[in-house]
Image (tube, rainbow, N blue to C red; front, side):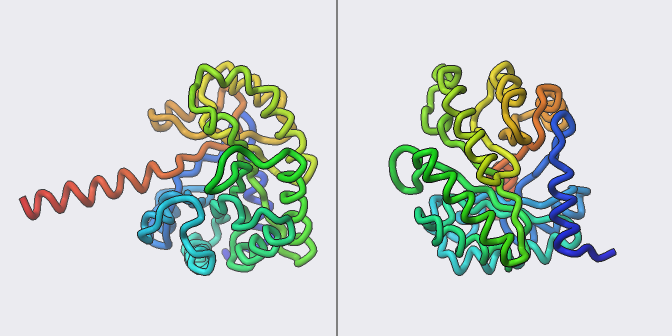
Length: 258
């Protein structure tokens, strides 16, 4: 069976079910995307740190955009009939029109989703709520007008930028304000990255107008089940697969050369 792009997008959206979340073991290239697909995944997604580091670049949009577009195309092809989502960081532009034009390149490469963060890439703080909502609206509108709609997973960087988990409770209201604005602008899911306290996750999920993506904890299926019980709609693991794979390569090389 060969699915159309619209069918892949619809399937991807339908997989975001609060209480029965989509689990994404993030890939970084065509080979890892194919491996994830063979393992029985329901969708394929990349993590920006892994994609960049696999090509010898640091995270944070140091990977050239043209190269990311090429990798995105190979990942989407390797995913086959599975929906593919690309971690697009800050869309390589603070300007709404520029972000939209860049996101359209990712859509044309075959992806049906992007992860899009509100932290200032390479700088301090977060983009103002209104400015980030404008970028989301531009991406959603431009891609839809081109006949290539994207599922935007809008990342909220308040918690990861705060660092101290003890401060997370005080940031929930501000994060939910951003979530509401991003959803109104067209974001299909929200990613409060590094929010980990179960009570705070549950509260965030109850108040968020669209499904919530949470960074996956250790514990495999048991850890994912615990997040599902909190109302999470999507679980992603970022660079964890990349790190585990590279640790395996290094261990094998040490055994060979040691």
